[in-house]
Length: 295
Image 1 (cartoon, rainbow, N blue to C red):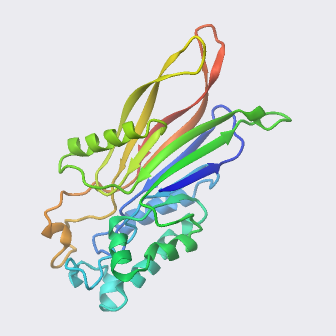
Image 2 (image 1 turned 180 degrees about the vertical axis):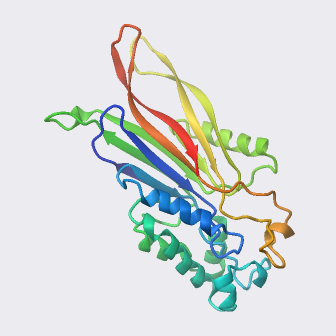
Image 3 (image 1 turned 90 degrees about the vertical axis):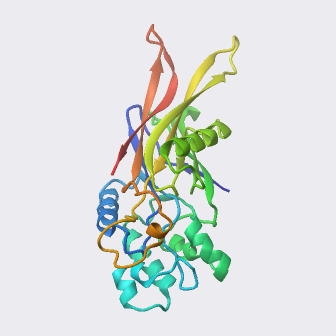
């Protein structure tokens, strides 16, 4: 597991930060919707890099080598297929760097996926190491991460007096899950309860896109003891791999395995810094308000 902390700079109440979640790009497969990916990357790159950050959650590459039983020339990206069978993985690495370079310096977490792990096991080399260096992403080969974002409060003359907003995210590339959405939601809710301090739970892998919440009751440290409700926001990110379409001329492992159709695109979380007040208007502290959107 990778443990990361990012301090994002002074903010004031009402400011909003956005974290973009991208997973399962499967670059190198002809079913990768590169037009949608480029549109998404361009949209992110047009925003302020200080207030728009990115999590990349693995399976950036399709990473099906010629020695893999799932390999088929017909399922390769056109440019890679036309270049022949040699050096397929390095061609995918170059494609990923080319398409994701606009995100350079914005990536707060980069995870390995099960497709890249196949290359690590067989070739003893990690294709994401080069991508991580090229994109200036902090990468250590982990499949999961715990990321803490901290935003000190902006004040006049004194940097926050020690006060800050904080959001913790628990990330995992993803594993298993039922065929139907109910099984996938249940698996992620179980993970949320295993990580009670996390505000955001994020996963890829299933190629399904949904957002849900779960709640925990938390006892405070005050005297008398106060009980508060903590909401956890659960994101299953979706994919950029279109498994079934008329551009696949031949065999694709998606069809061979009878996988479910994918939910194309990505998700983001908007984190709005807010104060909370009681019925008498007394300031009771600060909390981030989290809401979401999709691309």
